[in-house]
Image (cartoon, rainbow, N blue to C red):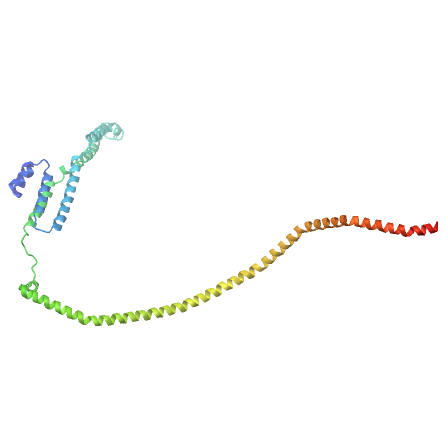
Length: 318
């Protein structure tokens, strides 16, 4: 395989480039480096180069995934343990099948049955071992040969104009070559025409702008008048509604307020009755105390006068 690979590589690439890839420690990385250098040397816009480099990066990521599959096999202990377990299980299998094949002569049919079961189980174990490294069982050389043939076919298309434009269309696309003086004259004429067109259109544009301004003012006046009338109507409705609500609230609260005022007046009178009674008793006592001496003095004088008046009568009688 190595000799076939080296021969094919030298037949497709230059000798120096082929020797560089063959002598490299990691050949895929060297091949990717040569691809990136070839892309940078292509005579095309840098945006196209960037897109090609993006595809090259995707190719490199895919290469890394394949290398991880190849260089990270299942640990050897797994396969050995599986093989040992199957061997021990198949070794004791005849003892389990001995009674089942008692109808045959000397249990002879047990031998082919055990061999068939062993073949199936060991085949599954071998299949699992090979799937640990799929690149050893896949036809990788056939894949590569097919890809190489497709690339060679694409290279043969270089320089072929498959779709040609009609000659009439090509003549229309071709621009006539003019002298610099004629070009300047054409530029001046076009500038003069544009200036004259602009000067002619300025009055029309001013008239249109004035008309638009007047229309805008009229529309604003109409809208403002409509809005004012509508606002007045809305305000009047709101005032009426608020007045009705206030009247209803006042009517609803009048009985409650009257009851509350009556209750408060009664409470105040009840609270003040004892005080007024006490004050009246105190005043009566004070008046009585003040009038007792006067009454005593008056009664004493009246007694004296009566005695004085009665003394002559008593003397006369005696």
